[in-house]
Length: 84
Image (cartoon, rainbow, N blue to C red; front, side):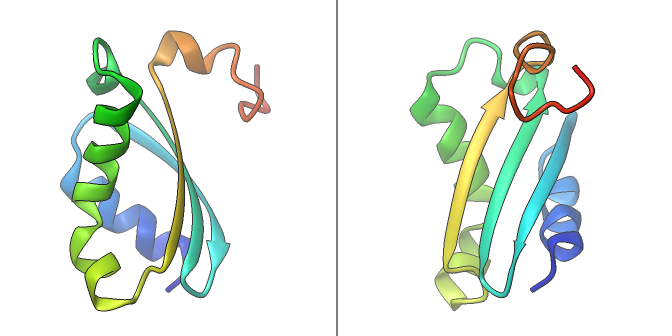
């Protein structure tokens, strides 16, 4: 898979989020930013992303997925946010 394919899957399955995807083959790093994460525990945030990619993980199309999630306010000071 390509990062653009992973982004398209997440865009289609989770509303109101901005996704930044890096990686290649079946190993990807996902950074997700959205109000949807407000009030969710870190585990629930991870589960939301994993759930959206469950089919691809089960099929082996995605093997390793590293996830970081932020609310928009958290994103403003996140080290991954190169525009901050």
